[in-house]
Amino acid sequence: MSGFLTLSPETADWTDERRDGFLRANIEAIYDELTDGMSKPLRDQELLAAAAERFPGLVPRAAEMAAEAELKLAEKQGLEIAQGLFISHVLASPRAGSHLVWAMLQPTTGALERLDEFRATGIADLGTVHLSRQGRAGVLELRNPRHLNAEDDTTVSASECAADLILLDPEIEVGVLRGGVVDHPRYEGSRIFGAGLNLTRMYHGQLPFVFFITRDLGYVNKIYRGLSGAVFRPGAPEETTEKLWIATAETYAIGGACQLLHVVDHVLAARGCRLFLPARKEGIIPGASPLRLPRSVGDRLARQAILSGREFEAGVPPAELLCDEVVEPEAMDAALEARIDALTSSGLVNAAANRRALRVGEEPLDVFRQYMATFSREQAYCHLSPALVRNLEEHWNAHERKL
View 1: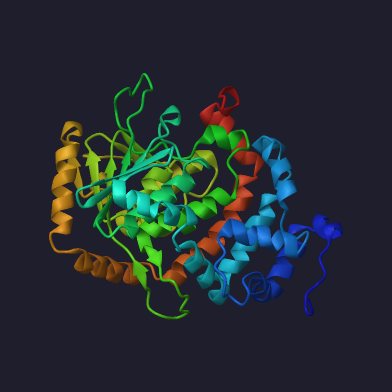
View 2: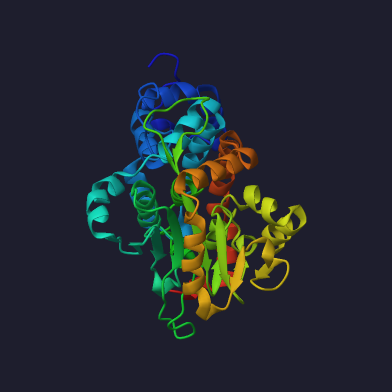
C-alpha cells in the first residue's frame, strides 16, 4: 500500500518508540484500510486481528497471543503493549476514535442471535451471567460465585450480551445490575455486588489486556450511553437507544463493581456495604473512575479513593455521595421493586431524554474518547509491569492461589 512503511515479520522486534512514531504518522490511513473507509464496524479485538494480518509486526498475531496466553503474568514478553498503543492512537484520532466508540456500542452478534428467544421466554442463561425480565425490568445478575462475583474474561462477553438484550427488548424499561448469591463460607447465602477484577486469573496470565478495553468501551459504556444507531454519523448529536439503570450494591462493590455505580441512574445500597477502588494496591487504573468519580464525590475524595485506597461504607458519611438510597439488607427486594415503579412511572421516552441531556453536559463523547486514548496506553504498561506482579503477591497472596 503506497504511503506506508512496509512492515514484515522481521520488524516484529521494533521498539515501542518506533511503533509509536509509525502509528502517530499513519493511524487514520491504517484505520481506513482496515475498516474499508469506515464503512465496516470492527470491535476492538476484530480491529487488532485485522491489523496483525495486514501489518505484520505492528501488533501481535493470533499465534503469538496464544503462546503468550500460556504464560503467567510475570513471564509474559509484553506483546500486549503494542495492542494498547494501537488502540490508544485510534482513539486519539477524533475521526477514527469516534468510529471505534460507535462500533463498540453496536449490539453484539451474540445478543442479536438470542434476542427472539429472550423476548419469548424472558430468560437468558449466559453462564456467568443470568438475565431475566421481571415486569418492566431486566435483571442482569452476575454469577461467578467461586470468585465472589469478580469480573474477568469469562464474564465480560456475557455481561455485555445481557446489557444488549435489556436495551433491545421493548418490554423492558429499566435495567438492573445485581450480584448473585454466593456459597463462600464467610458469605454463604448472601448476594455480593462484585469483588472487582479476578486477580487470580490476572496473576496466572489468563486475563488479557484487551479485557480492559472491551469492558469499558463495550459493556460499561453501553450502560452509560446505550446502543449506537445503525449508521455512523460523525459530528451528529448522540443517537442512542438507552434506558435507565439501577444498581443494587450488596455486601461490597469493589473495583470494577464500584466503577459501575458511576454510570447507573440510581444506586440502592445495603447498609454496611463497602464501596472502594483498590487499584492503588493492584497497580492498575480503575477503568474510567478517574474521569467519573470526581463528579460524584469531588476531586479531593476521588484522589483519596484512587491514589490512597480510601473506602466508603453505605450509611456512613460521605458514602451518600455514591448512593441514592441506603436500605437494610433484608429490605433490598422491596426497595428495588419500589424504585423500578418510581423510575418507570413517567415513561421511557422522558427518562431516556433526561439522562441523555445530563450525560452530554457532564461527559461529552469526545471527552470519553480522549480519556480512553490515555487509558489504553497507560493501562497496557501497568498491566505488563513487574510492579503489578509484586503488588498481587504482596496484597493478594496471588502466588498461593490456584485457578
